[in-house]
Length: 219
Image 1 (spheres, helix red, strand yellow):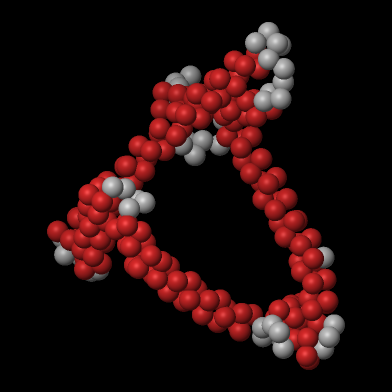
Image 2 (image 1 turned 90 degrees about the horizontal axis):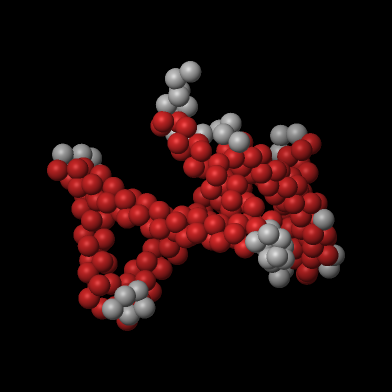
């Protein structure tokens, strides 16, 4: 049987590292006198975690280099939107220069960039997001059947219960709003989180046993 090293090696490395890190979580409370096994597993697990940190740092550097390469290529070829690429690269170079020359991210110049440029931009994006959410909510409030009627009814009760005028409209509105948020909404959120957790566990187990190999060619 012809086995490709490009498939076997990444799968083996992922399985071994994943098993050791998972075992390190479960044996963290074991006494260290069980043939030294607990201490050995914890040390190997911590070693792998430190390696992951180093690899993540290199991956961040590669992503940084890739951003520069992609946008520089767009500028050279005069593709549509190259003006935004110029702004991005100039902003990137200016921010790096300020960070290196002023003494790091905690310096006054770096804080000025964050407080006077980045934070207002983030506030603007969140404001636009609020408008989009309001538009989507208006479209979702169209009553078409019984399910949408219940959805609209609960949404209106929660919205009115959240604002101060709601208590003047009906004194029981905040109480009903709290019940909706703490009972059916919280139960649905917990159900979704449980489903996500089970899906993550299943995906992790499939990666550990080599059934899924997102890090290599499966053809």
